[in-house]
Image (cartoon, rainbow over all chains, first blue to last red; front, side):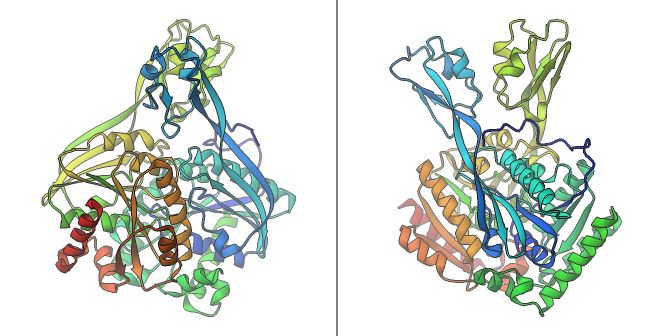
Length: 306
Length: 274
């Protein structure tokens, strides 16, 4: 798969969307995005799930996908200097804005594949080659199709790989007549998160009642607002600090954001993870599963009313 | 000495370790490189004494000089320029500031234009100097801001870098050229899976590493077995403790209420130096 993806930020408005798409995000890591996404997928019967956390993907450990297709992902290039041709003029070193060239050697970690060194070299001693940044997979799980990927350790272009994963999910959704795509988003609010949000119908923010959780949720809501994507919030581990949970609910209330539920702190999440199962399947009768089912029902109601 | 605190998986306790360690040692500068979601200042509550805007260079086209030859857009590896008959468009959010378009333009029609991507704040909390970046909401390019935060390193200090989650380029830039990396993980399958990828990144970068296991007592023993097999030193365990979790939720670094923990962080520091 060598296709370039020119612009992953834009919303595709030309095609009228039939398949709905939701992204689960959080800002702060470790609030429970993946555990919830896996449970939503287990509760849903007509969805495709995609893991948009391509550099630290965890969803496969709960959904146990069987890989049907694998695509190599090459989106970036890296420069290499042929020592036998180099005349030590140092022009490349001077012009490299990434500080990637020192003593006629390219540091592949710093190189961003722009091609300035190749262009400027008077003796054509520099060559840019495509590098494999990762692999994308289309799989089936007991709950439906899954699109996922694995970025090579330390690689760039996670945003482009996220866009590729989502494209694959859309193709599968159309082929399999699925009505919904559920994206498990990465932490943060930067490049890969933006790539996981472009053009989706709804963002569901999973937060926790810690000061960091609240701070990061506010930035995540800001991001949804920036891209004019409607947002919902749910509070995980709400009983760790009920005072902060109240603050979250008040903040959302005064900003017109719907809170779709709260989940108690419970080691059952970790136990389900160790067992490799979505928590709603591992402990279907527990309080946690009850809360997740409610959140999913409310989210769907909201999503299909948009 | 420069120590990075990283994890792979988010929410394992990087900031907790970075902040509590900073408060346990002397002469510390803490750099928060998680510019998308900086949290260490929430725990440290520093007095801010300097705020600077960080910009990247993006192309500005002189429509008078441009003859729409299209060489710039053909060269640009990031699709940040688009040229059609009598039109040229710049997509600054895609630009990596390589300067290539300026070099290839035969009409010298391209100059630099500064584009703000975020801010850097500097301050002090007790004896800890803190520098952190805040990426503008909606901005995709975190790397130049992380680099700008790292440019503030004071080499005469004990520098602690709070790295962002993940194992991609922002982790690489944060831990690049550090002397040691502490990987914070939790004893769960997710923690272990992401730890393994981070270990690979650090091996590729030749950064020595050790592991801190947070929320010990939960999950399973596989992280322990992995560290033993890979010969990665286990530096410390922080047990799952409701008191620690409660303090964190209120934004209180736990060493301030549980000062007996300071010596554990000092021990890590000594272990690392050896």
